[in-house]
Amino acid sequence: MILRKLSLSLLVGAFVVISTLSGLTAQADPASISSSQVVSLPGFAVVAGASSKIVRNDNGVTVSVSTTVDPATYTMWMLLWNDPSQCDGSDGLVCDPAVDTMDCVLFVAGHVVGNNGTLNYTGHRRVFDSSGAIGPFECADGLTNPQGAAIHLIIRSHGPKLPGQVNLQISTVGGGCDVNDCADVQAAAHEL
Image (cartoon, rainbow, N blue to C red):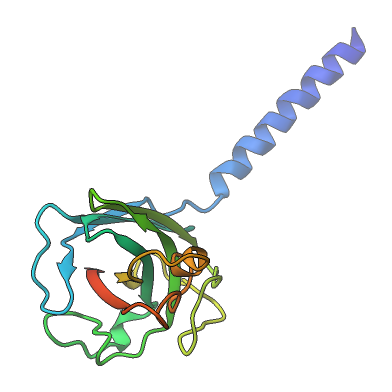
């Protein structure tokens, strides 16, 4: 009986300590969601029916693009400015890739688009993940400011499938470009 009371007393004490400590833990900022139009490149015409979304939280960002393109191989890249206050901007953008030096360019996703032309990409980047960075825009830290970074998503065409090169065409910035004409064909800007 004494042992039972002691065990119950220790259990209640542990619960009180855990409850007290949990009240002291830092609260993470809630997730925020932004949507953006998808535009064609060059020219910046809005792509009818296309959409882009970013969900941001303290741990990283989840990005998605839904659009239509010609059948071919494609990749999606994230242009990243962790501190948009350092951008001069132009053409209505806070951060303009033609003017402002990016912190990173990061691979997000890639695949072959079939005859229906439907391209749906979703990808996630954790804080401090710099895998898939391409130089000269390689970065050591990757995304460091998920709640405040300016992020542009770029859809890059690598042209028709090439035998033996499809994996490179859907996973690298230059895959297939020695044979096909590669080009950035669509973009979506997410700026706060």
